[in-house]
Amino acid sequence: MKLIIINGPNLNLLGTREPKTYGNTCFDDYFSKLQFQFREVELSHFQSNIEGEIIDEIQKADKNFDGIILNAAAYTHTSIGIGDAIKAIGIPVVEVHISNTFSREKFRHKSFLSAHAKGVILGFGLQSYDLAISSFIKK
Ligand code: DQA
Image (cartoon, rainbow, N blue to C red; front, side, top):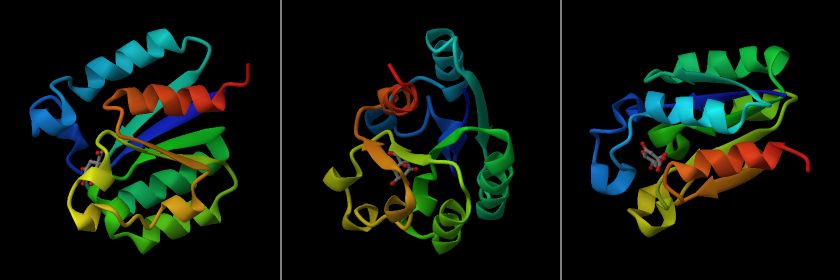
């Protein structure tokens, strides 16, 4: 099983960015933990602050991975292009958020991605990523 985690804008700042909301662990440290925890899964990670690069990566993943775990961050609430990319590919996408976006500002309640995703996991802190990976593993 090959999965890719695609993270959007400002998630490169995890660890120092708004720690009350996003915690104080940087994603690279967390990713190493995930790789150990899910040794049976071939996990990759891509992060970009640029919308078009995220769309390119989603398109590329279609041929190279079994699924995508996508935290498009702020683009979740604005990007018809990322929503269309999810719709265009053949592999499942699980939308993830660290925070519970429904308990935050109203503009974060709207997602242009959820309708095209296989499922959505949010509000469990970084554990949202663990839960998303688990969702791909058949027991
Ligand atoms: C986020 C929630 C978004 O609203 C926000 O813009 C982010 C991170 C989350 O993981 O909680 O950057 O996707």
